[in-house]
Length: 258
Image (cartoon, rainbow, N blue to C red; front, side, top):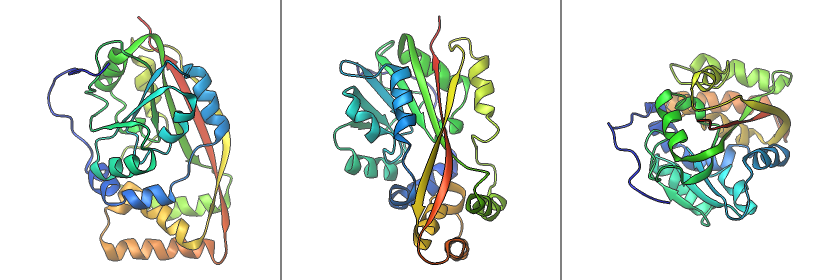
């Protein structure tokens, strides 16, 4: 199962991933939403996960999806290159083996895993090189599963959150616009993409929404005083008490073809 994998040049990671997610790992674990059980169940069915199967969760972060894969009975490996995020994952999901590696260079032998997943992350490494590597480790006919929580544009609170944070974005990758889909569809080793939407929501307090906003990579790298300004504006969006924040969660699956 484990092996040297494919050798090659050093893999680069966007500075916002290393600094933003690394510095905000505890906040990410506290403030980020999980995924709807129906969406994960759909993904598990498409990936045919269960006892005797092996799944690799790429860019697993603090294990938000990883922990939802464990009950399937499959053997779960979590690949996460950012030390701070991986440390949180190891605390939250001690039942899985957490590895420091990259999508472009995984420590698995050829055709040794039954499924690969990426939650809230594939847009960071949607390249031919990463897809080549995913195809290498997948057994023939097995699938890649992707899932994202996206701000529901019909939710007024989410609309105001977007107005707050999007002017702060620099050159960070985003799954909005689905550029990643073009890369997958053009790749010769993967077939048609199947997808489905699921409603999801998160209950937040003023401080909870502030932490949620500060866990975003390009916000987490701002100077401390600027972060506090953004946090105060986020708290004001909630006011007092609690608010429900709506998401549209979309899951996708595509099979390795030869």
